[in-house]
Image (cartoon, rainbow, N blue to C red; front, side, top):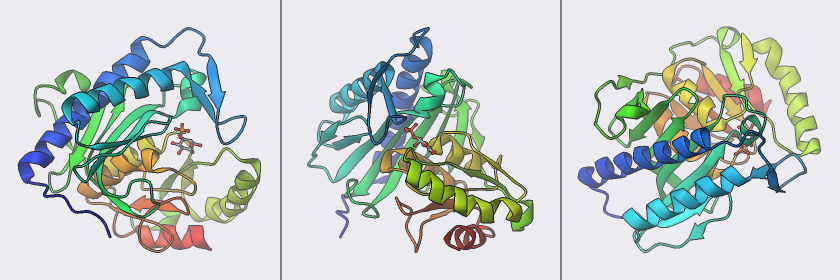
Length: 283
Ligand code: LIP
């Protein structure tokens, strides 16, 4: 059962503000201090699942920022930060989502920062309440809090409120064959082979697919309507958490194999399309 701390509207506003501030600060670091040649420091689930020095520096920065501002909260980061908290709130951090794009200097990577309730370490055991995705290449930050709508604004305005904010709304597309679908693939060869088999069924059924290489940016594109849907299996809490709340606050739905998104499957779309995309991926 999820621990439901007493989350007031004022606290939600403050958590969203901190998510934006932290994501933009880490986004500026990975953009402005990107080395000419990015070195692979380590690999994780496979030889192609890489960690760069900037993943590590970005997560260390996010870790410090959360500890300074919200010392009572838990923290779970992609690159190993794992801090228990006492507040019932956990910060879920992806210091660079789209690491392979970052390694190859392909301008499609993000910093994803979210606050969740429940057990962030248990697949399906948590729910986001605030989050921000910074797109450092476009100098934009996308953000939401439960009940506050979903927004995009230039990162330079991150500290000044909604000066040039634009509300995000999901696509109203309701036909699968006209849907532009974002998706992605895992790092393990056997997983990729299974995903390729699913893609054989998916590709003829939709308008087209886009493989951007960052789940966080895929989810933001669902929220702003620049893709009609997103579906992927194998993503982690840190890939998903901020984009989840942003899609829902933009009027979309986020689901999984049964109901909640997670490792087995994450699907995001407007209400008219979600079930059709879920069924397509489940076969
Ligand atoms: C990435 C995800 C993306 C997936 C990639 C990779 P990372 O996360 O955001 O959706 O398709 O294979 O897992 O590893 O760049 O943080």
